[in-house]
Length: 87
Image 1 (tube, rainbow, N blue to C red):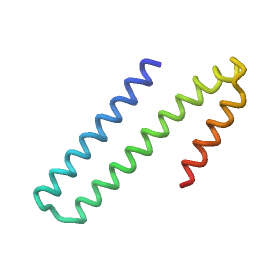
Image 2: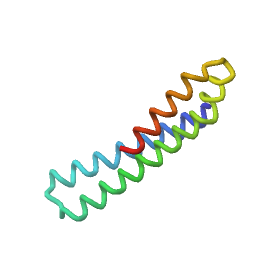
Image 3: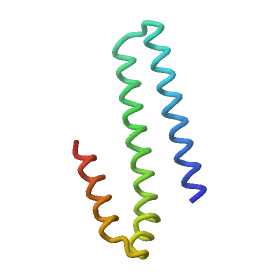
């Protein structure tokens, strides 16, 4: 889990760096298209972050929940995540 946590934190640091860069671009009145391109990069990075986090959850937390007899809770949680992903 620690290697997964490190990977997740590295992804967040990358996203933070991108956001700071975008803020600076806006402050410096950079070309709008260049700023939008960077925002797309942040969006892709967030999707990669979400995927890594969800993959870890599905590989560890969900099986543990089922083993502990929390089936209804796990199913409800997964349903909520699915609904959120569809919005």
